[in-house]
Length: 120
View 1: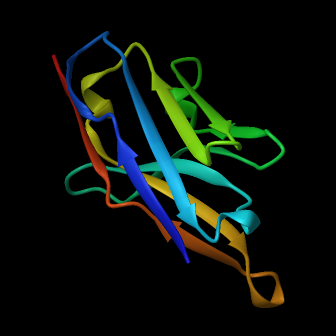
View 2 (view 1 turned 45 degrees about the vertical axis):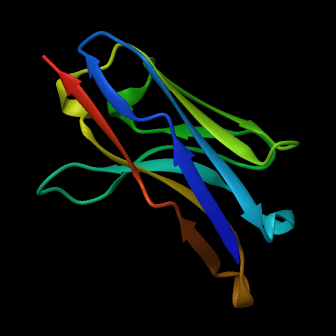
């Protein structure tokens, strides 16, 4: 089992910055990807950014150039630096981690979510 705890959300004006953190504990030795997803009211949860254990990253087009994901494997923590925030970035942000499961199917773990609100 992997336990994820997010922190760093809050209220910020458009154009501002926030940094989210997510600390993993438990069966962390087998974690592969870590990342961030978000869900706005009335919308489906969507990928924001992911980072593999080797450091390769993937970003949603809507955040490229504004958000940066990083990972400290020694601290079992993933970060999301969010710059030039827009009102449409308002959502609950969820930390995600996965590890290989049986038959190669990844097992996903989720944090409880942290609210990010960007005012115009």
